[in-house]
Image 1 (cartoon, protein in one colour):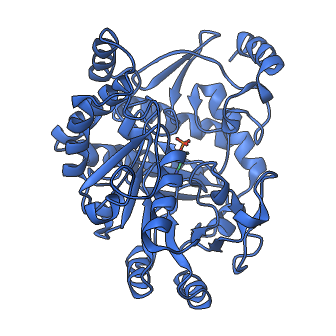
Image 2 (cartoon, rainbow, N blue to C red; image 1 turned 180 degrees about the vertical axis):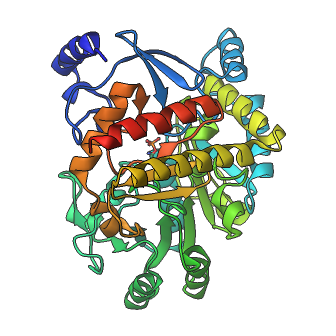
Length: 428
Ligand code: PMP
């Protein structure tokens, strides 16, 4: 495929935008080459500035669960826009989407809307600290909760008690309050809780991590986290920015039958507009301003266009009794097809899948945490990525990303993708 115009546009962008992109994951840093510029998208397909058609497995990193330019969402946004795009005053639609979200997600009474997943997680942690009167948090290596300072901490070694900033600009003062644990390692969490008694406000976790590829919880990890948090009076925060309204109507809380104290949302909840949200039982949410002392605000929060898109999306998901089964069936079909051709072509791999989240790792060992995810063969991934791109299949330009399956994908699209993997893997 030819990417002449994309390359030219990227060269222009680089002059005025750092790295040519407004979010680093869009750059092809891990795989080489220049990013593709999108012109438009519809359903399962992206159309780029060079006129190429690509089957999209990124889907704006998750939000487009029903495909691009989904008509009810487009119509809702267009209609709303005609009546004004922002007021900074209450609107009825905010209550409507809040009521619907509260009815779909287990264990929440109230929800507050913000503008991104980062804001949702940052605000959830502040609320947990304000509610418990404690400062420290536990996060897991390889889990991403947005780019707020306390989350930009990576594990030096899995058992290290104090975090090390992994971005300049994050102070040691901030880093010391973020304790790192290994996902799926409950003993590690237990040890941290014992060593920091009465100091930990919350554990924040992607219940099904999607930022180190997709990793399923094993050995009742989430259930055991719940038990430990209760024992130590620590709030459990599920960052459902990826998994929310995707794995089930009620996200991972519903899928695994484990209640979180605070749930964070983003991506699907905004139907592709900039929306995040965090939600909890009233007892916790009532600590937020203006009812309580924990401050949190936003000029554009609850923006009418964003709420219209989100409401149209959630309504569709809520009313379609088979949507999550259908998504899972498509993902399973893709999983089995890719596994079959990779095996036939003798390419070492592990495929992880939960619902409509799936990732392909080029290593044989089970991928259960950040350490095992990092072992994947990046050279194989680069070949895989560029090979698929050349065949017209667009996956995320990083081995640490999940593929997001949408309902717009047909079985013909999936067969096309499996055949593309077959061709590419013959030369890997
Ligand atoms: N949490 C999770 C689990 C995410 O995947 C992301 C974004 N990929 C975020 C939080 C941050 O969301 P945003 O990019 O909207 O700030």
